[in-house]
Length: 255
Image (cartoon, rainbow, N blue to C red):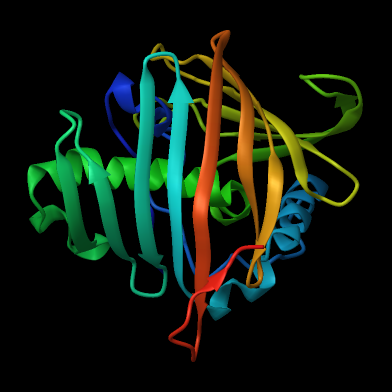
């Protein structure tokens, strides 16, 4: 199976800190099989993942997207192409000092990469990929406890949705104990979420919408997230989303 590692980064990347408690290694292409021992909550996680294209993920040869984060004093943009079957990553953006970076690498050979790839580029990749595909990661990851807590009021605005909490364990990872609270609508789409950090690093709490849904081949992608990080306004949005399907050399743009 292809694996995604934890990330370790600096505050200026900010949202590269949101997934540090996820399991050290996590499957990308081959999803876990449901079995008779799975709880109802885990089945709920599977249902959410299915709404985002779980069953057809194997058709995807490559995903292209640009992750953008805007909050006071910071404007981040990172362009990626990920080939999940080989775990090949191509990145174009800037380093922590603002200098242009363009690199392609295999994650299976990460230990042989330069320090900036290991310590900056790859951590950013993991973060941005979780923003892109977290409903799938919540099912793929083996370590978290997934609990359906029933219908609760939405954290922003009016209305209600089913709260599905994805809590990572208190050991392992760089900031163990993180929780992602997903507020899921009747169509099994995430409408809003709250991220609770398990460790002392900032931000401690991030609350955003999940909107701007687009279809990229078999994958459903939320491209727009608006809300707050520790009370400060934040805008996370994903642009230039496209997939390349098995047997095709052409990109299919998200619509």
